[in-house]
Each structure stands twice: as structure tokens, then as C-alpha cells.
Length: 218
Image (tube, rainbow, N blue to C red; front, side, top):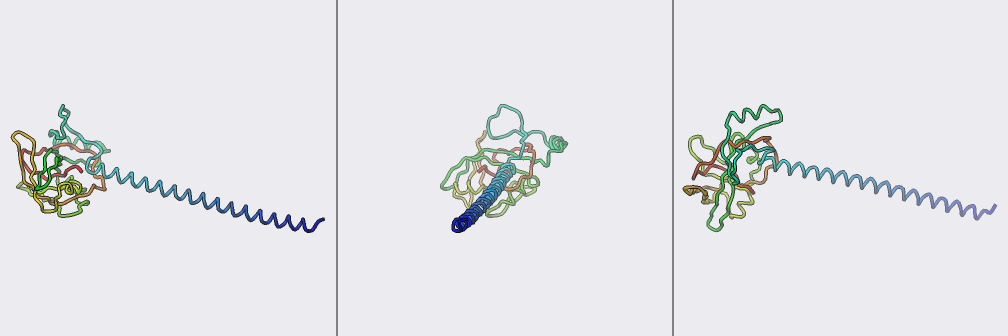
């Protein structure tokens, strides 16, 4: 038996085994890292999806109940009332309801003009999502006996109009006769991050020339 060949084969076999072992370890580590990255990516995507859903449904709700007519404008006619809300709560899938009103308007400041859709809300039902997303100023005041001229603006609308908290602006309402209201910018908001409503019914409307507190669509 050739001793030199025997030793050479042993060394070659040991090196081959060591190399194979290293490759195997690298492959296992690579697969583990790949799986970990995939898990983190799916978790981030799921978080973004839930966040986007909550922001959409927080102000818009999962369902909006409105009067059936040929009106193609963004304003809605009042419907139902307490009886409709009571009927909606008979469905176990409905978590809560929120009455609201929409009114188109033109906001005019010293420097800018912008068309918006105002949203009037009930303090008890619709205020919570906005309170938790204030970025500046104070929340709207809801007096019992008098109308309020305060308005809550989204940060995007406030930036377009160059408005700050406490600034005044004129709101022009397209109606017959034309209406105008002087409102004070009370605060700015960012999109809501929690969804509170399942179903929404239009139960109130904004009167001509009034300055009902509302939130503009961003």
C-alpha cells in the first residue's frame, strides 16, 4: 500500500468534508435569514393594511346610508332619524352609528381660495376620532344654545389655504340665496387611526348660511 497516496486521500477527504460542512452551514443561515425577512415583510405589509383600513373607515365608516334620489352632488338629504338608527342597531353586525351632514363650500382667505366639502358631526358620536388626531390647536366647542363658528381643518387643507390655528376665513355656500359665514380655524388634524363606526346614517343637514362645525375632506 502506498503510504503517500493514503495520506493524500485522507487529507483530501478531510478538506472536502470541511468545505461541504461550511457550504451547508452557509446555506442554512441564508435560508433562515430569507424566511425571517419574509416574515418581517408580511408583518409590515399587514400593519400598513390595517392602518389604511382604520383611517378609511374611521371617517367614512363601512357603510353609509343615504336617501335614494337622483341628486349627484356631494350633499345629502336628511333621512330617517332616531327610528332609523334604532332599526340599524337591530343587526348584531352593527357596532355603532353616527349621524352626519355634508355641505359644499368655498373657503376664502386673504391669499387663497379653495373648494371643500364640510362635514357636520354629532359631538357624542363623531368627535372621538378627531380628538385623538389633533396636531395643533383645540377641539371644536359644541354650545347647547348657540351655533359655533369654529371649524376643524385637515392639515392638508390648512397648508393649501396657509391657515394657522386662530386665523379667520370666509365660507361661501352655494345655495339660493347665497350664504356666507365667517369661521375661525380651531385646529388641524391628521387622518384618523382608529375606526369607531360600522354604519352611518344621514340624519341632519346644514342650514343655509350656518357655520356648523365640520371637517373638510383631505
